[in-house]
Length: 75
Length: 239
Image (tube, rainbow over all chains, first blue to last red; front, side, top):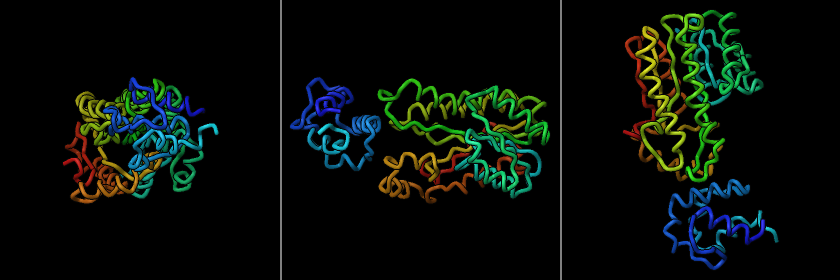
């Protein structure tokens, strides 16, 4: 999966209008709440990345999300 | 003592396996049904008769029950422990995942209820005991389909009890338990979750053994006046 594909899936999962990239501050989205994190956990499960709710404790930006999924992103 | 023929669905692990084991210890004759035949070997070694059957295949399950009854006579109890948990917000849930939850948690026990009501399969003093969940009454995000099917199961317990008397129909509604099913969601049920659960459970978090004790009581003559009832076993977490 490319980085671009990954961020497109994140945008689709959170159902936000604005494109997401490394520099996006996720905390500005009201969709990035506890249910949004559950939705993202489902996305990570689909792409084969093991995460738990604590994994998102320090996630504030697109860069942080990308780091969580780094094993599945094409170099 | 719980002599007589008991049929346990979903007996290969967790609550089902523990209940089957308890019924054998109490002198019962146990027919153990589960999808994974190899997972029934421990129970078979303990004295149960193993019948590989997938509860979502009604005809196959019916055939297994016919064999069980031919071998051990009409059942004194159906104990339905098969369950499928889906932890996903509804927007991320796939149609086949939702159908699987409904098929295992609701459609299968409803179809088995038809057999339970027949003297071909059960004695007139038989008990149908289902394993529900506090999710039936305590809604949570991420387990909507699971909670909805367990609420449906509770409805079945109450309605079926009215339809099949003097046979009895009961349920247990465990809170969170440490079982193979929940261990598959260790990313949700992590140490932090367990700590929070302990704090909100005045009698301490419930165990599989607590649930088995309750099922044993509900199947026994001591519970002869209890039908159409679902007993919560959660250490008081939902009180």
